[in-house]
Amino acid sequence: MTNSIFTVVKHIHGFLASPSLWEQTQFGLQQFEIPPLDLTHFEPQPIPEKLRLGHQIEYIFHQLISHSNVYEVVAHNIQIKKGNDTLGELDFIMRSCLPARQEYETCAEPSRSSKKLLHLELSYKFYIIDPTISEPIHRLIGPNRKDAFFAKLKKTKQKQLPLLYTEEGQQTLASLGIEASELEQQVLFIGQLFTPYNTSIPSIHPLNTNCILGFWIRMQDFKTDAFKANQYYITYKYEWIHTPHEKVTWSSYDEIIPAIQEKHFRKQAPMMWIKKPAASIEKCFVVWW
Image (cartoon, rainbow, N blue to C red; front, side, top):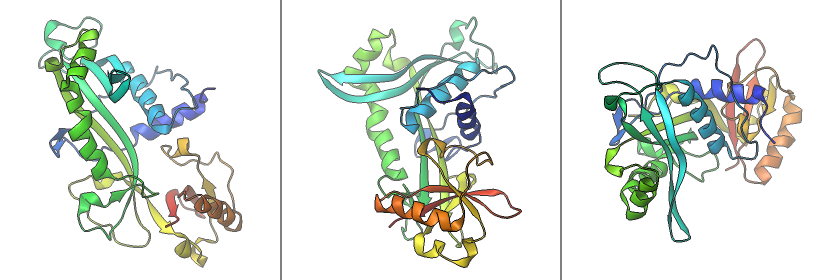
């Protein structure tokens, strides 16, 4: 099965509305800048429904970057193996079609000077901000406390990017006609961040506060009169990336409580959309811990 075009369009809009976790260079990593996109004649393609959200987002990025005519995707999801063991995976190898000192030419006839190769690692994550943790960049953790921004950052720097220069990585690239030394490495770290309910925003310096797109709350704080007049929708995982919209089946406060409790029984923190009377729709995680 494949995702409907409606869902893919929502994926695309959500992706493009999500800011990068930092700009330019931070933590020794150069942030990739998505080129300007004219989507007037863009025709989104269905993506496999069974894929986890991270791989669905890779499909979206692949479609968008190919449409830009600024980059050509040479290869993606390149598995690096040692015998029968998989050491890791390279997300994207792309060819820049920008002639030297000239912006946004197309890939139709790239000149020799424009054939810069780029290895890109893509990460799109959802983190809550935990103010009880002292170091700002350690405060970003998964809503189920199973992952963390700093762990992802460390893995990218110490494992994923160096994989390119291992013997196995160089052999794999050589089979594609690519020399590892030709590649520039960048990352695209995108995140949706959620701040604690009813508190001031904790520091996440040097990360981008524009990534804060909602709040998180514990069940005991959710069970108050302040939330009873709203309508609610518990999203599917693939909808986490979407900008909230009206075209869903809304539930009342009394209806949503047992649905949240069922998620919590399985130690899952649901993402909800909250529709307040005469107000915009908000995003929220209700955590179980």
